[in-house]
Image (cartoon, rainbow, N blue to C red; front, top):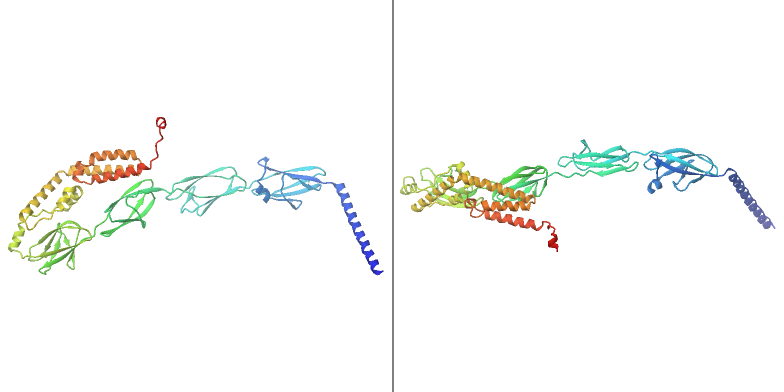
Length: 476
C-alpha cells in the first residue's frame, strides 16, 4: 500500500513539472509574438567604395554585436531583437571599427561600416656589408614604416664593390608587411698575368690556384698574388682588380743561383768573379753564380787567373776543377795571348738580352776554346761580327719587337671579348708581318708556334658559335 502511494506521488510531481515548462514556453512565445525580431546586415566601405575582404581576412575577423561574438558572414544577416545594437569589428589591416545599429522590428537593417586602413611596412633584409639604401646604412634590416597603400616607392641600394641598383616596391593591401631581400650585382674586372717563366710555376690568387692564362672575371678588390717555382725565388705581391677593366700584371720570378763546386789545386785562398767583374760568393768551396751564360774567373794572389765559360741553369749544380799556375810561367804567358770576347757593359747587355734575339743567344752560347789558339780566334771573330750586326739593326729590331707586342695584345683582346672575326683578321695581318720568313721571325723566332696556338684557339671558339639562320634558297 505504501509503495503504491509513493509511485502515484512521483507521477503527480512529473505532471506538475511538465505543466510548468509548458507555461514558461507559452509565456516566451507570447513575448516573442509581441516584441518581434529584426535583421542586421553589415556593408563594408573602403575608399568610398564597397569592400569585400579575402576569405582569409573574413575567417580571421572578430565581430561583436551587443558584446556577443558572431562570425563575419557578409552574405547572411544577423537576427537580433529590436533596439540599439553596438557593433565592434576587428579586420586584419584595418583600424577597429566601432558603431551602433538601430535594429527595427520585423525589418532588415543595413549598417555601412567605413573602414580606415592601417599603413603598410616595407622591410629589406640585408647580408651585404656596408650596404646603403638612399645613402643611409641599412644594417641587417632596413625598415620603411607608414607606407601608403597602392603607392610605388623607389629606393636606390648601393654597397662598396657592387653595382648600384634601384628598388621599386609597392604596398598592395592594407596593413601589409612587405619583406624582401637586398640583391646587388658585384662589380667585376679581370687580370691578364704575364708569367715568366710559365713552365713549372704555380700561381695563387688569395691562396687559390689560378692558371696564368685564365681570363675568368674577378670581383673588384685587392688580391694577394703569389708564384712559386722550385728553381726560382718565391714571388709575392698585391694586385688590384678594377671594375670593367682588365689589368695587365707582370710576374717575373728571380732565378735561384747556380752552384759551382770548386776543386782548386794547389789549396790556396782564392776569389771568383763573374763576367762583369762582380765578386761571386763562395761558401764551402761552392760558388753561388747567377744563371745564364757567364765567364767565371778564379784568382789567387801570385797566380795567373783561370777562366771558364759556363751556361748555368737556375738551381743546378756544376763542378769545376781548376789548376792555378804561377804568374810569369810559360803557361801564363801563353794564356794571356789567347783571344777573349770584350766584356759588355751591363746596360748594353740588358738591351741585347731584350732585342738580340737568336743571334745574341748564339753568341752567349759560345764556349771559347782556351786550348786551341786558332779556334779561339775564329770564335772571337764570329762573335764580334754577330754583335756588330745586332747593334746596327737595333732600331729595326726595336720597332719590330714593339709592333709585335701590340699586334699580339690586339689578338688577345679580340679573343677575350669573343669577337672571333676581328681576331681572325688581326691574326692574318700578324702572320703577314711577323710570320715565317719575316724579319721578326729571322731575328726572334717562335712566331710560328704562337700563330698555331691562336689558330687552334679560334677554331675551338668557333665550334660554340650559334649557327646563322639559313637563307630561303638554302632551305629549299
